[in-house]
Amino acid sequence: MNRRIRGRAAAGFTLIEVMIVIAIIVALAGLVGVALFARRDEAKVNLVRTDLNTIKQAMKLFRLDFDRWPSESEGLGVLWDKTKLDPDADQAKWKSYLEEPMPNDKWDQPWGYRAESETDPTQYDIWSNGPDKQEGTEDDILGRPKDDLEGGTGASSPPPPSGR
Image (cartoon, rainbow, N blue to C red; front, side, top):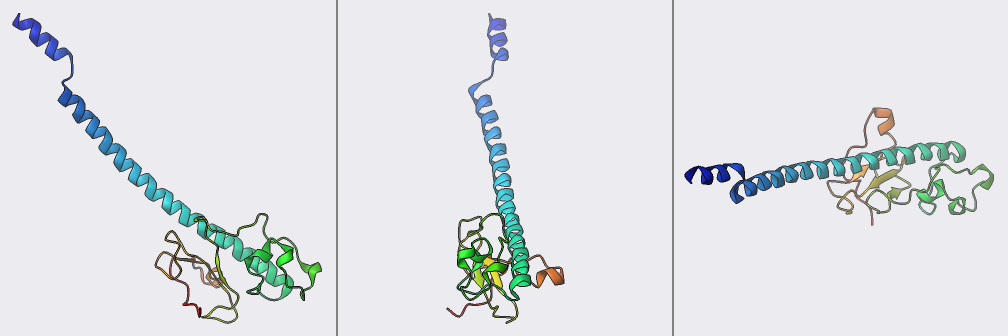
């Protein structure tokens, strides 16, 4: 009779063993989940940098056609919407500089844009407020036109203080 009891006990798993296995699976899933979410956030930042570079290229084309950056009143919308073009500008020169409108960054916030940079009056300032959606914080992502010339990447840093 003692043999039968030992045989049955050895054939199955105890509740504690099953709970330990489940706890290990949950712990591993948690670690993988955290790593995936961190990569997702990093990917979003890289997509914003790519979008900023696309906008900067469109800005260069606009400047070649009009010999100026878009004005504050025109904003970035002039790159995809002719109706935003200053009425005094030569309407015939305008073309769609971006295939699709890009009014917002990946956090669904409007791009920050200043027609005249506060650090260099011959340039403009463009940025994303980043994941926290607050201007002038550590996670802001800049797209300075001079980064192209200096080999910069538009690294995260706050935009110059605004006069607002």
